[in-house]
Length: 325
Image (cartoon, rainbow, N blue to C red):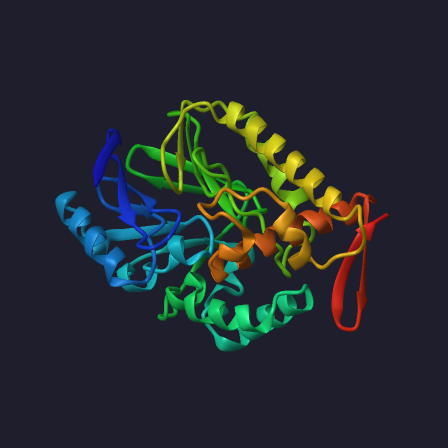
């Protein structure tokens, strides 16, 4: 699907088969001399075909196209290695530019698996995650030269002048784009309207949930008429949604605290106490990859509670255990 949002600004819906996210919103900006594509979809044929079809319809010349990637997740960055040419600039936030090329490597994933296992994730479930995790399966396999951008940098294409806004939380270096004259906020997965962004543990980011909540406040003050998220529906009232997201995480923190009332637990043991928006009757029915996302988010909330003085963390017999402070 191709939808014109404003003059020379288009949304291209890229399907994400068998993903609860359903589709990615990729955005195309047309200029007189250059084009800009914001986020790309996964590195798989089911994403590439509709992307190429949309670009043909929009008469986009890839030899004159640059890219902006909001963050490293494969559903946003996976296709850039296929689409970018030697003449392309690929704008990428600086923190993630330093390690994004390693996210498809086995060593990177083995380190993550060891960390999750220490938080209670069973080895049998980890093997299933290895087989099905989209970040491992659908990341770009081609190394691309990246142009690192940071807070305040500007990207001009046609009649649009975007300012880079650093919003770590959903990922270590997540970045939004803001067009002040047209009051447009391209927010990747920082703000989503039909679903809540996954806030997980990152070894490269201390207290990811606290940083996420801080950076919701950061964009709250912006004057915005059109919000362009990475998934699902567009909206215009980002402030109302930010308040809803804040309340969502307050509730989740309370659920994590309640789970610890009867004794210490691993994050794996706390996760079933949390309310998850997934079409399953019980924790046991969750697909292994969804359990992975849930446990990662549980760790982020437990670490927030520890930093806030409401929970305690210690390691016993190679397992990380949380308890009430």
